[in-house]
Amino acid sequence: MGNEICHARGHESEVLSVGLSPDGKTAVSVDGDGTIRTWDAVTGAEHRHLDQGVGGLVALSSDGRIAAVSNYSKNVVRLWDVVEGRELPTLRIDKGLTGRPTFSPSGQIIAIPIDGGLCMLEARTGKLPAGIEGLPRI
Image (cartoon, rainbow, N blue to C red; front, side, top):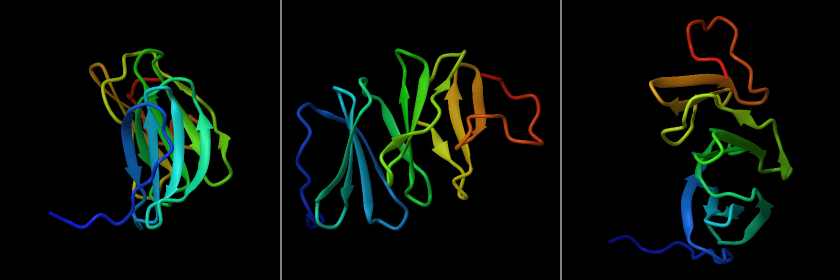
């Protein structure tokens, strides 16, 4: 069993999902009330507190800057710039969400699992990437 590095406290309801940046320095958590918190993954210090209103599954981009939180009940993926603490475009999905969004290694594309397949979009704009055809449009 490994040693605990830090213990981050602050959520008022159960934590549903956690994302960790590739460099291991930033953690993002989402609770059942829809609160998103960003943390220093080494010290446990809270960086930001964002209220999204509904919990979901979180993924963090490869640069640790963008968090994507899927919300099954509303069929949306909410994007947040966790460094600046601002919301980016909300991605509305026509087909049902079925899992956690995933970022490409560059962080520029987000893949979203949906009923019957997947949807790939530009992470910052929510638009279909150039050169990709035949994927479900949202």
